[in-house]
Image (cartoon, rainbow, N blue to C red; front, side, top):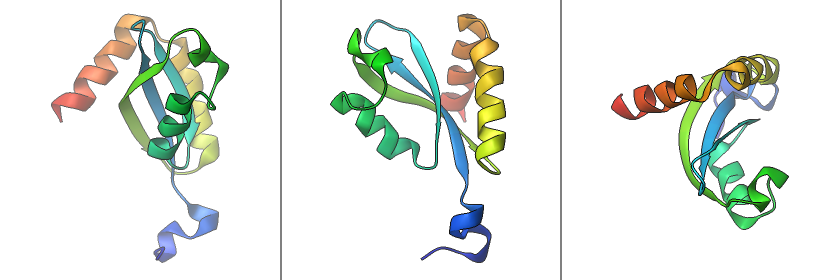
Length: 94
C-alpha cells in the first residue's frame, strides 16, 4: 500500500550505479532500481551491458521525482570515474 506522500504521482525515483564485469560503472534512473538491475542482469536493460554483464548494484540515491533523478544522473555522468568510485565507497560505508 502506498502512503499519501508516495502516491503514483509522487512516487520516488532513484539514480543508480551498476558495476559491469569489466569494472566500468553505468549510471541510470528508475522508480525501482532493484527491478531495473535485474533487467540489466538478464540482458534486457541497456546495450551498455552487451559487452560486459551487469555484476552489482553499487549505488542508489533517492530523488524527489523523475526530473530530479534525471538532473542528478546528468551530474553523475559528468564526473570522473574516481569521483564515481568515491560515491560508491561512501554509499557502502553508510
